[in-house]
Structures are given as structure tokens and as C-alpha cells.
Length: 615
Ligand code: M6R
Image (cartoon, rainbow, N blue to C red):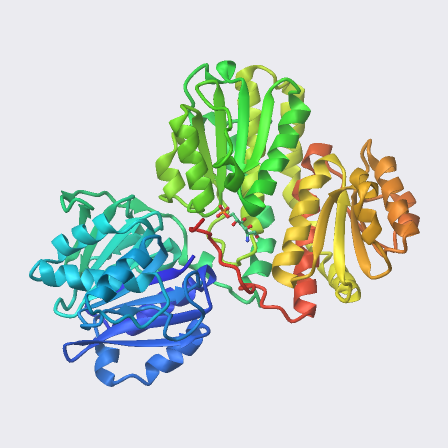
């Protein structure tokens, strides 16, 4: 949730840390802070607000601080304690020996705090983090200044999830880290060491990254990285090369990352299809290598994810179901899967989908499935992420770094891979016909050009956003392959425009929600020209009869649909199962331009953070 940056090298740390925080600001952005060295002390600067305001404050620090060759920084998404300067990280122990930043939740912080307060230590914040900071200072003293031993004892005491990055006052040039449950990546570029929550913060320095494992610690210094288990034993570690370009994480000439990332979707799809198909055949076996014959034994397939990634799995379910009605498919949000008694075992294949690979609920769900002996696959955008390291097989999505909090191109990366995965699995199972395979692959191959033509309708969609942005809310309706998109369209509208938005299977409207309709609630109806066109148009007519303004997505050439809505966006025809690949783009553009018309903070919407690493 929060973004962490640490540096120990030979250059002034402040600029490196501010830049690293700015790159990770999408992880949390209610407050920010930095700690630097000056004359044997550690000096912190904190603000409530954005990293740019922290940069202004840092410029006013004494020149010695600006020369500091090591430091740590943090951008916060508050969990414990209000959004105040005092609660912003870094936190400092009462004896000024330890300064640290934290991502995660220390579950036993109250118990630790009570214990330390009864020993006379005065706490000054409402955060859970301060308990770890004060405790580490006490342990460090008790260990006679042995940092490794103090870290070992600290990690023994803490429960919950944490990525901790620490400076000790009497250890200049050293930074210590510990990870349990919250991501942390480290790197050494030959003269300086770095750590961050997110690899994109380190790509300007090196592409060779060392991801901390669960229950692992690291010592950073200009001479390199040292790794230890929580037991204090030293460990070797190989770096992983991440072939992302730092330019990919730049906004370029776009006003918002979200807009840039929406525009990248045809490339993401093209790249994915090129990487995993040969002419009209799926070639995913190269990247998946499931045990031979496994699919013949699999009786059920489960798809598990959160948020937009969950909607991507609904698309996968629909494609799979349309091709093979016999296989038992279950789709579940990870936050529910983890607490339900879901059947697993060797005859079950579970596919976990997570852009970040760090979503706490998805990781917990995957651990539960593995414990039941279920075969687990992950689809993630981040090589080296926790889910990548914890499941049997990972298929990397090729979307590249996504910075906008609202997922767009990673959704495209996910549904592209999921469609290919589904075809691969059914082929292995013997239930995918050659004609369906060729039909869908050629549909996917021709899709990027069609998507581009929809992106070119931006002016038209912007005009509609301007017209409807005053609505008190939206209803997104559709049937079958459109239903996942109604959810994604509504989620985008909620998260970036903050407008109440419901997603409903069109046939369900009359069972209750239709009562809400009036002239101020806009219905967005998804009506591709399929066998369900007439039925959906009837549902649209029911909405219009209740005076709801109606905006329709219809297939090119469907002139008959024109009279059935107040406004209409025509989009290219596709294979029915592939409608989500094209239909999602106007919905993203509609949410984007509605949010823009309402003056929302599109890349960093209120109350949200890019990856949800706490439960
Ligand atoms: O990193 P993940 O794919 O696991 O994240 C899941 C959700 O948190 C994410 O899709 C969220 O819903 C986005 N804000 C959607 O735009």
C-alpha cells in the first residue's frame, strides 16, 4: 500500500529518494517523508500531501542533509492513525537511535506499545509502526549495538505484515530491511545499494533486482547487499533481470498515466498474441509446461482474483464455458475464496490473477489452495513478485509497468493471456476444436486494429462524457459476455469519477433495480449484435420507459439500434466471446473523460492505492 525507497551509496540521497517516491506515489499518497543524515544525526522531513510538496520541504533542509549519501523515504496510504504529519513516516525512536519506514500492519502493536510504555518509553504517534521502531531501539541497546541480532529479535516479536526499512544513528552508510507479507525489492548497481516497494523505482539505476523473500532481511551499503533469514543466518541470493524500460513508467506527453496506458492496449494484445501463438494455433505450452496429461485429470478449474483482475477472470470463465460446457468452472474473489471451504486437491486447477502479484487476499487464497494440493498457476504482470515466487507456474503478462491506479492495460494483458490459457487447457483436455482455435486466434490477431479504431473515437466519447457527467449515477447493463464489462465499466466510473455506478445483468433489472431509474440516472447498455441483441434491446426499452437517459454500445452497421437509445457508440464487430476486448475501451474512455470533466485526480483517486498488500 505504501511506497518505500532507500539508498546507501556515494551520491546525495535526497534526490534519488524523492524520485523513487514519485515513481511509487501511486501506492499511497496521503502523506510522505524522508530521513537523511547530518552531523551524526538523522533528520526527518514530513508533509501531509504529495511527494512534490515533500521535495519543496527537502530543499529547505540544512545543506549537510542534502549531502547525505544515505537515506530512506516513504509515501503513505494510512491504515493506523489519521493523516497527519506526526503519523507520516519515517518514525523515530525516543532515544533517536532508530529511524524507520514501514509498509503493512503490525498486528501486535498495541501489546508492544503497552509493554514499552510501562517501561517508561513515550510514544508520540497513533501508528502501529512506532511500536516496531521503539522496540527495535530497545533491542538494539540490549544487544550492545549488534544490528543483525536486534533485527532477528525484532522479527521474532512482530506479528502481521511488514516491509521495514531502517537507519541506525550510529551506522552511517548502512540501511537494514526486513520483509514479511509486504513486498520489498533491493538492488546494487556496483557503487550503491537501493531498496523499494516497487521495481519501477529502481529501473533508472539497474535492471538486476533482488526481491526479498518472506521472512528475509537485507543489509544495504555502498559495498553491496547482504541477505539473512529472520533467524540471522546469512543467505545467498541471485538477482532477477527485469526487462522493463524506465521510459515505460514515464507519462510522456500525456496528461495522465491512465490515458497513456489505455492507448497501449492494442500493443499489449499484439505482443501477447505474438508471444504465445503460431499462425492459428495456441503455443502457450512453452511458457506453462504443466505436467503431461494433467488436464485430462482435472475435473474443476477455479479462477481467483480481486477487483479488475477478478473481472478479467469472469471473461475467462465465459470463454471457457462457451467452448466446453462439461468442465466445472468456479470464479471467486480472493477475499471470499480464502474464507470459504472451497474444494481443492489434485483434480483441481486454480488460476490466480494479480497485476501486482502482491495483493494480500490473492496471495492468501493461493496459499490455501496449495495447502489443499490444488495445482496453482498465476498470471501476473510483475516478474519476481510474491505470487510469481509462490505458485507452481507463472505466466507473465506483457503489459509493462502500469502506474495509473485504475487498471486498464493490465486488464487487457490479463484477458489476452487468459483467453490463450483457456484455449491451451481445453486443447490439452481434447475439447477445443481446430475451427474454434483458428477462429479465436484470428479474431485476436485482428483485434488490435479494431481497438485502435475505437481509441480514435475519443472526441465522440468525450462529448458524451461531458453530456452525462452531471448524472447522479450510472447503471451499466448487458448480457452474457457483456456482464463482466458492466462490472469493469462501473468500477472505473466509481474509482476515478466517484459517481455511484451499478453493474447489472440486463435481465435482472426488472427484479428490483429498475425502481431506481429516473431521468437523472444514466443507463449504459452494452448491446453487441449477437443472438442476445433483441432480448437486451427489450431491457433497454424498459429502462427508457422509466425515463432513464440511455447510452448504448452497439455493433457497427446495426442501424436498427440507433432508435433504441438517446446516444450510441458504434464499435467494430468481433467474435462474440471476444467482445470484452473491444467493449472495454469505450467504457474506460467514458470513465476517464467523466472524471476529467468533474476535475478528479485521475491517476491517484482518493482513498485508493495501486496494490492492496493488506487485508
Ligand atoms: O494487483 P491486483 O491485480 O491483484 O489488484 C487487484 C485490484 O486491487 C485492482 O484490480 C483494483 O481493483 C484496481 N484499482 C482496478 O482499477
